[in-house]
Image (cartoon, rainbow, N blue to C red; front, side, top):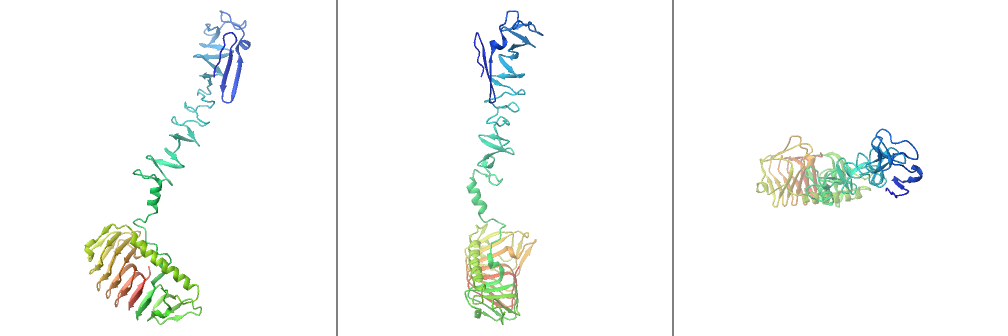
Length: 389
């Protein structure tokens, strides 16, 4: 702010928080028409008198300070519109401008925007890495980004979070503690020997008497039993703690996994009208509103991280001698057969994957499986080989 009077001039300069009050008449004295100030010599260099004040280097002097374009310089800096310039930059509202931009709230402006925490603000939002920030998240392409991911297609961050939480292709079905068993059933597990199971067996709520054909030998702890046909342990609901609780949890997890698999959005529906023999299938979710028949070899091709989910509304039937072939690095632990009816594997079938059945699973003579048999009723074996992945 600059204030002048006619007889005695009061200069009021504002620079930051400092006010400079200069009674011009007292400091400068009178001046004559010869350009002398208080009896001093006339102006040097240009030698001309400007507005009654001595001129130096072409600029009028007031109280020993240069006047440029009608503005009074303070400490060799030019004041503009009553504000003191520092290092060639104009101060605005008492703040020093940086790189020619007006400072706001003590922050230097970047690209004409007020800087916040060292970042240029855009539309009142601070700028990070060229993106403006909204509610602490970077904006990308006009969308609020959460956790460095920009929302697209005009969708909100809440919508994007919901999408992020949804099951995606490539994500295996979570089996929970049910994934600790090669065979898990509710009402019974039976075999015609000899079978060979690599992995644990679990039965609940039925008791150990419903595990037949295995010639079980109880462990002294009575927490589990063993069998010559099982490379692993056999658990039943009437064994000693903590087995009953563990089995109850596993059975619950099995039901949850079944529901989760059924809930995945299908990529393909009704393929082959329920007959997929001889096909080569890439990863994805396949769904049928009917039963599914596999009368000849089926190939699943993909990488070790690819996931297949087969949603079958009725029964799964695999004809005798059929082989499920995994190619390209595909793994049996990533193949899920969600069967709302029963599953029947014919003689000498070579099957791959996790069978999640709402009713029973039956393997005929000589059939083998690399995977898990998880049945909400019973599992029936007949000289079969089961290997948990």
